Length: 341
Picture (tube, rainbow, N blue to C red):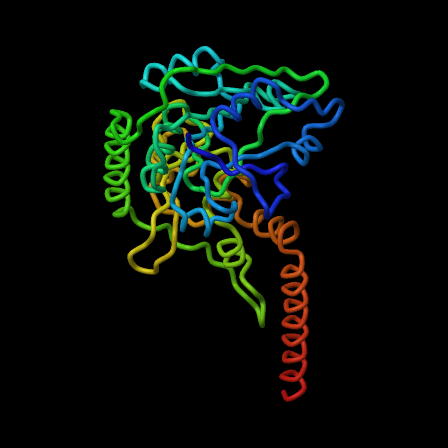
């Protein structure tokens, strides 16, 4: 039976233990009761597992170990319930699985939140694991964990006033390499790669120009350097599906937003062909363009001022100082020229 890296909490960095599928089922059936804690407080006390039997949970170690022992999925604010999730899994010939609700399930303004574990008949490489994870994320419109192989999963805990649900499928472990699911996942990846090749011919939107005075630093360059596309898109409610992303406005299941690397300058830019996506301009845009369209309704001047003040206060102070120095130098130059005349 395969094992999974296990820790008493997300704070554990060494001396990990391992649990198997049977032990995992017991933890799902009888979660730890933490009483009247908040969800945030409970996270710090919740046991965690990883999708691998690597020695620790760092990305470098996990990828070097290259032995994945569990398929897992994050379903946040999904319209699905336990039975419909189980029916979908069974329809894909996945018969040994665990579905459980999270601590924030149906709490406050949160909707249905579930975690899915799929028992594997044999361990798989990261290449296969990531491929299947991405395809299943597409099927369930879930967060794509394949981009974060080191991501841990919080095991369920009970809290006062919570709504805990779980369902366990007791069939045979899933043989990934012999499955039709893997074939479909490969076809899914090939289709995405074709979309990316077609999108790579899309022209690039010219960079918004600002006049820099003296030793001022470009806020636009600072924005483009400060964030990763993946984290930025997740912050705006996108869902990763393999190499593509699904915008929050989209009513389809097919992700059509891509991060493309330019053949001319090597920079990564965003392109979308979703009609409902406000960033679908027909051009490849940078991170600053993306933020302006998403948060400032295309108002570049307002975006520059507010982004500088809010996210880059030190650069903003520096630029204001350089502006004052420039203005003083101009006044001095004008007075000097007048004196000469």
